Length: 339
Image 1 (spheres, rainbow, N blue to C red):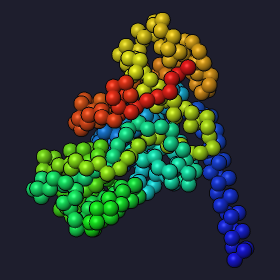
Image 2: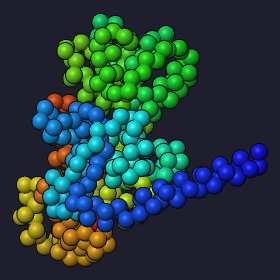
Image 3: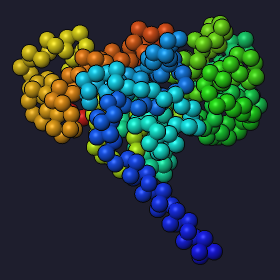
Image 4: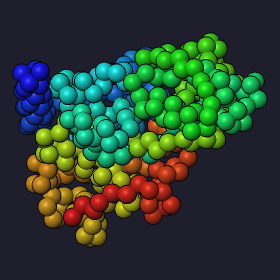
């Protein structure tokens, strides 16, 4: 028994060492190969979705493109790896991808036991429920004994169990590996209800043959802060991904957009000049070009632009900003200053 425990401990240390080696020097590796390999969903409207020509769009896609723009001055220098919920963490841990940007919830377990770090939150979400209108249901608390379509390998499974248990209700889960399979199961009446992050429910509803046949119930039963993920042990790369996101938030707060960014370079405002890489630390702290933040806004846009075209009023989803409004507008999106 002692020998078995010793071997197990040695194996664990070896795995941690291997993960550390994979993580070290990601920024240099990315610069050398000339692109960012980014893990995304297999297809979720508003977050990461390919069209018939293989062109990806979405708020998670734009987070990856912001990193590419910061490094190369070219937001197109990204390759996307579509991953299921079950595959995503292994792909990142193994070095198959450089970063994960796949509507992934930041939790204690994921932050401490997988050898991964969340670089920030690009969408504050919460789990909800979608049902067919014909059921006449107005609250999830009316669904005792329901069958529930759910995607496997997600935080929604535990949240669902907790919610039904705390409300002394029973349910039968029907699990699927992919979100599109989940909505097909719901549409085929394999379940009474579909549960996922609310943003995902709106994205899945527009995939229905008749989107008006389903409604999203009012209950929000969890906190789901979604954001990009990197491997632990590589602070340099962690900083680049984190500050690419923060640059988009800071740009919106300062009124810098993809349309006025060139004119803003003429500003005498010291904060804007630091943002543009004209004063202050510039790009040296991140090992990036001095215009790294300018390039993000020029080629991708600020956070408000990214939100609006992908999930907001400029998109089919038309989701309100809500918690994802800037802190100065009543939301909780907030970024440390670039100085």
